[in-house]
Image (tube, rainbow, N blue to C red; front, top):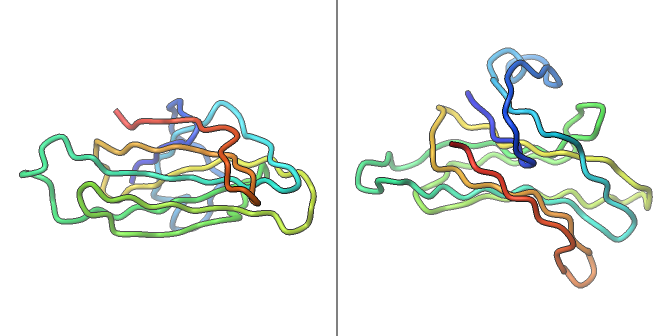
Length: 137
């Protein structure tokens, strides 16, 4: 498996996950986490835009995860993407405190043409405060 950091950058061997995921995943490392405060939420999204749609398989599996800085998953979703399809996972704090978070998209098997983003938004109006794009080369 390979991973897409929602904040960009590339490296392998990060070990925040244990068990099956930590054992088999090769991950990309973001440069830093982002803070979200009261009334804000974090979102990780991905879209599969195959370069050669007529040669693309019918679907690809992805797992989107938002982690806290301890490496614990605090939001996750799995989805089989179809070409030109996407997925999203949100983390909305309920305790009113600030959280530092980062996000990853794990792909199995590895594939190109994944476009992702990490977003911080105001919960009430749903307005984006910050969006950071990322691409798997």
